[in-house]
Length: 366
Image (cartoon, rainbow, N blue to C red; front, side):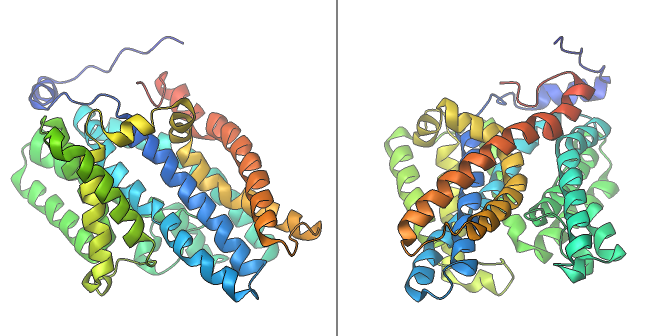
């Protein structure tokens, strides 16, 4: 398919682009970590589902699932760091209008489709009565749930609300500060970003990614003698601290040494991992991991539905037996296979088709 010519840019935009760093090449570590983070969240949900809904009476098994579940849900924080890292080139490259259109077509069609599925199913079953109101439904579709106390609709989409507001505020701050040189508007935009960060400290992970991108694009590199040891050591620290508990990253949580350990080790790890020739980049450069990175958004949003269907099916067929290890391996194998198959087609038809049809280019152009 032919690639459409890039839109014409004003002289101001061209000047701004010339001033911007050019280190925007495909980063295999960041792309691979997308897939790993999505898989972490997916498998954590399978494990917690078995502990909560199947073997809840087995105290030893339930206790054994806590640490891996905590670590698996840490994949969301990794997603936030990755978002901060990868979004800056787009903010620099496109006008505010084009950036908004690209982000909308990249995220909203799949989110909208699965939210409609959730609303219909919830209307039929009333499984979540608080989400069966017009206020909750409208807030979910408009990403306003953070500000009126309602929950997001389709499972896992709570993180998208943070993503969307981070994109909006970052783009606004950049446009007013760097491209249009509007001091008052820029001060307001930066202040709004600071307010959002203060109210929701979990935004710190986005900021980590953003700062690391700035460092990366300016060509700063860790000395080789410490790069790999720092990467390996901080990765192990991430596993250790993230396995210790689940946190909402409230202001109270920020006083917990474990939370500080998660944040510091995450920042150090990604600083090292995002460098050229990093251990992470080498380990995650294979075709399968790269594929998981490509479909990670679809996998993240699709898997709650396939997981739930598989869990019900296993229960109905009596496949959860007394041999927990065998049941766990079988459940993981079947659910993962079905989920990846569903993810493949959802990614193709709901995630990338609207974007490609409008822009006549692939989402990932590496």
